[in-house]
Length: 185
Image (cartoon, rainbow, N blue to C red; front, side, top):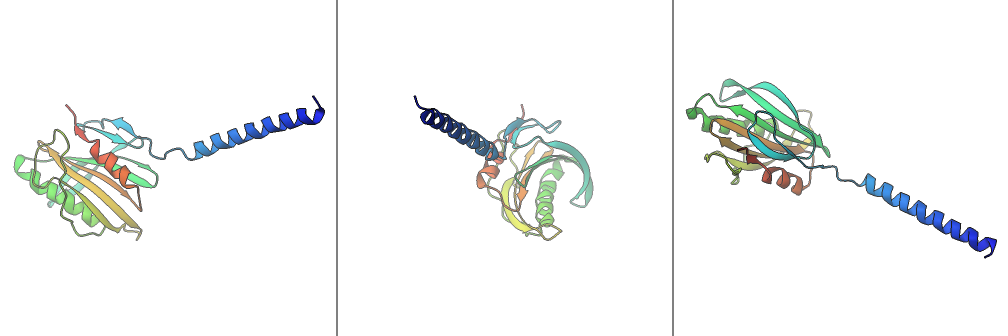
């Protein structure tokens, strides 16, 4: 064995090792930004998938001219926010009115007219004429253009708004988020 061939063999192994390390680094850099995980948001009564770990907050909102408490579970991944808002209706006669108000509020938040919802029903949900899935394009108060996909549904007197909002996001992110929603047993 000559010194040149031993060096060539060593150099070859170094090149292969360096290439392998660069490939591993490239794969790590291309890891998916959406790390889907099953979640059962506290006191929400649903089982769903989030692409990140959701945080829970509560706030007062005005729906149909009255203040209500909304619990919001949300997280952000890939420049997109995924959320689930939960509101308890005051009585059975308010469910449909409040669900329509949730839809109108979502449209107003992005400066969009309220589109006609497409059919949507989470497994285990209570049928309601205002349940549905909407797609809206609009702007945030700061002027940034956004897309909002939102599903509205009911279980008993509990109202839900699941939303995906961002400047742009893959269709499969929205589809994955909404298809995984189930009312918890």
